[in-house]
Image (cartoon, rainbow, N blue to C red; front, side, top):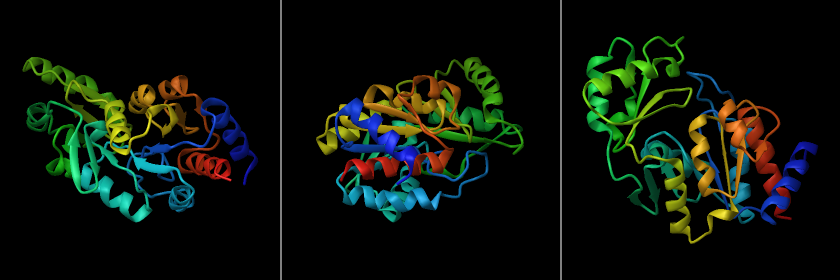
Length: 256
């Protein structure tokens, strides 16, 4: 147990009084070893602790912008037993069933973006599996997707289409107006019968700020977006998967 993990454990106990009932984990940039476009390798030191945290009584769940099949498959092999919150909160998959926390779909907006911005953006291969939230990657791998948000906004405005636009650092997400990771986390908590006040949520991007209303503690990995660091209760030492490992070790310490 590292000194950093002991300090984080102390902070968690001071804020919620005990070990978390539920740990909500973002994937890209948080569970991965790096936070960089095109880097998807998991941090295996952190990943190996997820099943151990489950064994000690804290349920884990993935909260991701990925599609439900990707989230569900990853959770199965990690030993994460909680619901999977996919499409940035719009879908929750649990016990073989899918629930939607979004009433609307961004599919019409995504079709316009795919048609009119094909020179700048490529649709994610996962879009064929999506229902509400659609992702686009910069055609030029060296381009930060967030720099292309203005182009997407302008095209959609010209068609009178309303959508929520976000950049995860990996992709641009074209989302329905009612999309929020908070809604997905709250729905997952209700399915488990737990109060959101004992949830710890951790992420790396500005989208993860949305988990603030549905968690007792919001944590940011050390290399997170400034907007998330500003809102977080805890900024973890290290970066990406190393930060997550420290958080998982802290939760294991609280279980003893």
